[in-house]
Image (cartoon, rainbow, N blue to C red):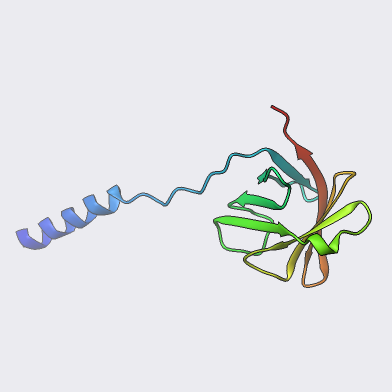
Length: 119
């Protein structure tokens, strides 16, 4: 009986020491305020060719880092197009006006406004 009790106590102590994995962090220099009220911070590369999000809520991807890469051949007027590295059918259109459109498999999922931080 003492052995079972010791085993249960040891298991309980170990369970109490287990910590949930930390969410990834990025050095955010911009954010998107979506129409559904969610704001998501991101890191915009110096060249503007990649957008990196940490633990995005708005994208259909598992928690973690999500990277969008610019499609250089797809510039349309004053708008640039990006695709998700994890889900190629997830696209984002960002216009010079700051308007952002999130598209998944050809369907508009959300729209928002881009803000770039100034330090």
